[in-house]
Image 1: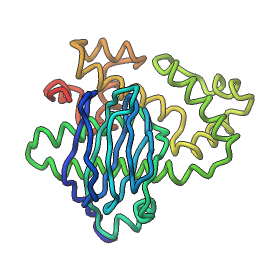
Image 2: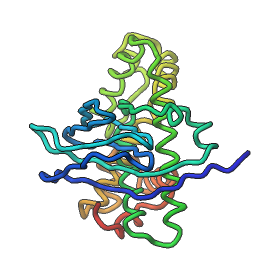
Image 3: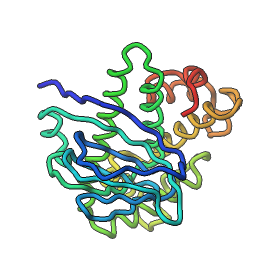
Image 4: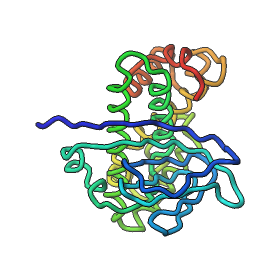
Length: 263
């Protein structure tokens, strides 16, 4: 199999800057944006778009881009400026369409955490940071492609899946039984698993664990809670299980987060 090459030019974090704007320019590289809060205005090839929280914006190279804060609201977002070789375009067809897109993010909390980790690697510039950043960004691109592909799922299935995700988001710190989820949409447990896999690419349990690990990353980064306290708060039955799940999903142990600077 041919190697997949992502060449990241820069990674940016914009945090509610009241004076933020981009003057009109034809962008030289592709740009992938995740809006994490608020709303902003893009003018892309003279068409106005207003992406908001949980939106991914893809801006291909050559686009005439201008941008500013929305009139009524500031915003937070990550932006990655990159180019990719032909093998990446072959595997991720949304990159080949050469048109601006707003893509609704189905795994927002997880992708927000991955963007945060990517930004931290880029800001710290520790040894091999470019390889680590490229790997994380390729994962992000893969999730975006999955969201593009699943846009064609029937609206009924999307609504049922959204109800399940909303319930899990509200209760992810507690043990959730498959039968509970089945009762919410009046379907069988097997249907719940199949529906969730079709619409998100993962099982309900995997989705719940993503939410827990995303919250754990936030708590490790912004509080002084101990690992044991975080594990108990998030519903892990013991600290060793929390450690195993965190390292499996993140690629590094919880202790590594405490040494990272705030984004």
